[in-house]
Image (tube, rainbow, N blue to C red; front, side):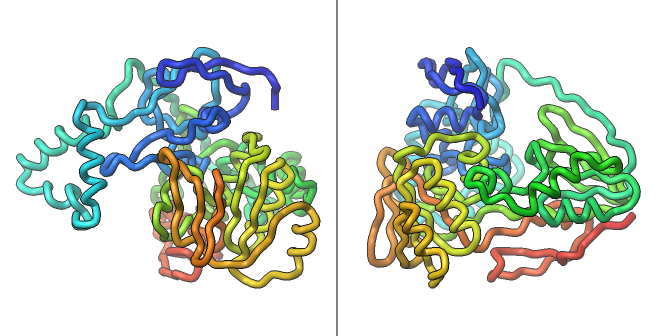
Length: 403
């Protein structure tokens, strides 16, 4: 990561930030945590998943709306704006809705104004300017479309299972992942705390393989029958056709249900790995609470500790094996419950509340059962089963689409 700096403009004010990092990370390091507001109630939103799967970090960049700033690198002279309400009374309207949200029924304005068609049309034209989202900018980016041709096998996801699947497949193989290098979501975090294991050796085999094409920084945005995928990389779209599609994608962070669970500063471990391990987000002397259990719990705690954060690790299960090692490393380890509420200061996280105590913090990492990613397999005909214990709908681990 380069140590040079660039100056961008945020809300018409100059902001000096490190070069080579994302807009979202640069704003965080400058104390700017609120990047957007929810369209309905105007609640503050900040960087959350850091991988382009949510809309919390969408801002207007150089006049272009709906830019995911977690994926957009800062450049000198860049103009960044919060894309909030587009009418003078919009913010007041959102604050009023928020104040009376407890008595407003679920689905308000999503269902109430759909019929008749004349009312629906008038309402849509009225509500969109209030949110500010979707308004066309002064210019649009050029989008290119290419064709990746035909592969014998397309593997989606370059974690350990994805790499093993790609290496064992015969014929031509396309390995797709939304990160720039193969290894999985934990790979960069493992590198930072010098606990490299299987990902490193497998990653080297992928890069040197003659029959595997690795498509990094690429997302699968749609699936079509028979065996057709639509990929997005940068500003370009591409199509690929495969005789066999194998789904080895990772999971999505799940924060859980509790009061103020949407505050900027709350995120899952995968968002943390991308911001701290890959983007090198500065968390030195930052008060951080890590809640939950499992491998991501400990990896998050040790990563943050290695980066100089003041870490309080709250285990929701008994796990004595690593407590002594963590404590010796300077991590405060305690046991307790998962969060029941989050507290805010100026719209961002200031404390996390458990059943019997509270901890002041600027960042809280929630670990535990993540949500399986299933959208593309479902589009391709996979059957889903609801499994609350695993965080949502799941697909057969051996599912593949053969055309």
